[in-house]
Amino acid sequence: MKKIGFTSDQSGLINRYLSESENWDPHLINCRNFILECVNKHRPEQIAFLGSGWWLDIPFETLSEQCSKVIMVDVLHPMQIIHKAKKYKNIQLEQYDVTGGLIFEMYHMVNNFRTMRMKRSISEIQTSRFTDHIQADYYVSANMLDQMDSFIVDYLEAQKMFTEEELLAIRGRIHTDHLKTLPAGRSCLISDFQEMVTSKKGGMNVKNVIHADLPDAKKRKEWIWEFDHSGTYHPGKKTQFKIIALEL
Image (cartoon, rainbow, N blue to C red; front, side, top):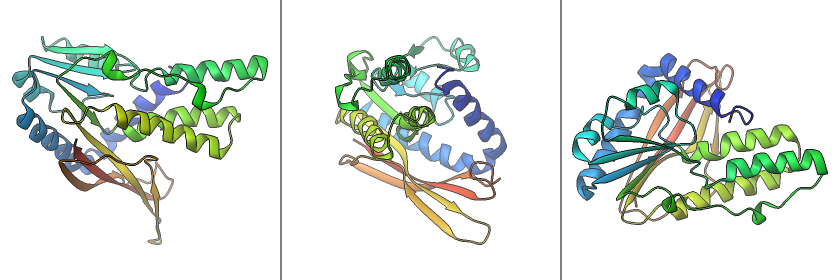
C-alpha cells in the first residue's frame, strides 16, 4: 500500500484534522448524528463501516453498546486504531479492499505495462462485491466514496499510461460499483459531492467529485464541510465540500 501512496494519504488526513479540528467538528457531529438516526431506526445486531479510517466520523462508543458486533473495514488500519480497537470486545477490524480488489489489480496493471508495454482495459478487470466478504445487518459508507478513487487515480496519473478520458472512466467505475453494492434498506451513505475552492480575491471554483448517479434515498440531508481554512490543501485558498447523507 505504501507503493500506491495509501499510508501517506492516511497520515495526511489525521494531520489535517489536528490542524483544522475546530472547523471539522460540526461536519463530524453531523455524520455521527445521521448514522445514529439510521441505526436507531433499523436496530442492526451487526454493523459494518466501510473505509473506517481514523473513526473520526463514527459514533463507535454508542454503537459498541447498542450492537453485538461493530465491524471496521479498511484496506489498512492505522496502528493507533489497532490499539484503540483492543479496548472494545465487540469491535472487529477487517482488512479488506472495499473496491473489491481494484487497488491491487491497478498496481499489477502498472507493473505489466512497465515490463511488457501491455495495457488492459478497465472494463476487463473483475472485482468482487464487499457484501460477499463482509457479512453484516447494516452497512455504513461514510466519507470514503470520493476517497476510493482519488489515491488510485493519483497513482495512475503519475504513471502516465492513461488518458484523461480513461482516468475519468476509472473514477466512474469505482463510484458506480460501490453505490450498486450498498444494499437497499440496509445501508446509509455520507459523501462529499462538490468541492468549493475560494481564492483570496473571493472567486469560487466548484467541481463535482462524484462520477456516478447517486441512488434514491428514504432520507437525505446536506451540509457544508469546512475542510481547509489554512490554505494548504489548495495553496493560498479555502476549501469546502458539500456533503450529502442518504439513508438507502
